[in-house]
Length: 433
Image (cartoon, rainbow, N blue to C red):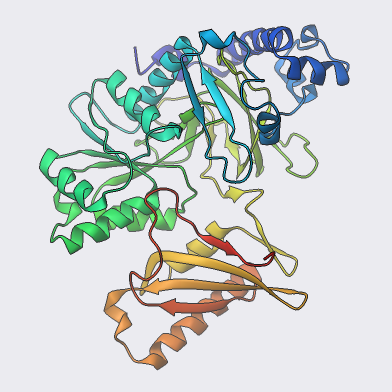
């Protein structure tokens, strides 16, 4: 059963007992089969038998992305390499790639979890899913692909790129579900208009968007332009890929973390201390069922909070709020902490702006500077220069008032900022070179 009534609507007590059983088994396997974890446990004076209840989780060591890089490529595998049927990896653009392995059961679980996610979004067997997530070593494309097949929907494995062709196939195949990054969906909208096609007139009814942070304001923009219901999906390759959490179409009030497979907690990103439910901090995940490469207390660096109140859709699994940003993407401008998503929210609330922007960080002398380049809507670009200058001043004032940051705002012509067919590049940091 794909929509697992017993698991997804289980009472909290029953769910926590399952989590404890799986956590204890995980710790035993990791200690016995992964040298990295055995050393970490011994350094902390811990043995697997010390995990007697879920509250003992806080005593276990963290795992960080650098640990995966330090053990490149297969040093964190908990099974013989010949039992690994698939390998995914990050691009490695900021260092060694992070490698993730999957057993046959891991791949099967992943497909079923992605099918769960699709069902939470309202996708069914009769749907045609246009999958514009990248295929290959990136987990997004294949994760969504096998989930749609598990559900019994028709999958169109278009991957990224070829935007004009994507628009034609959206029209010709009559896709009803779009999977992509939120920024790429807006790129598709632009390309469709240039081809004389309005995506809002196509059969598309659901958009499942992830792989980059996005705001509620961008959701409204996507829904108004593409004429669909835009839903948030969350995952990360180190843990599994997409399908760790999914927003339900019924409530659209947070993303359900599939807690029978992933044990979440929120910590203070500076001290590492656990925070109580409802407080905002860094999301930490423990894989409860991963065979090939189990991870204990993996620091995602994603900033969010957890809501344990059962959802009106009937699911009892905890909901995480939309990702606010990453702890390592937080901008510090003259001592003020700012997330790009906070700037995005102000920009998208301003009439006359397009949802395409870049944040350019620089340094003059000893002071950091922030320039925000944002495209204006074609309707107002032809307005007099004085009007555009007033709009720049208004945006600068709003950013100063609400975020406490002084920024230069530069309005640019429509379609001048570089579009991405994957994750949007929002930040250009020129401070160190």
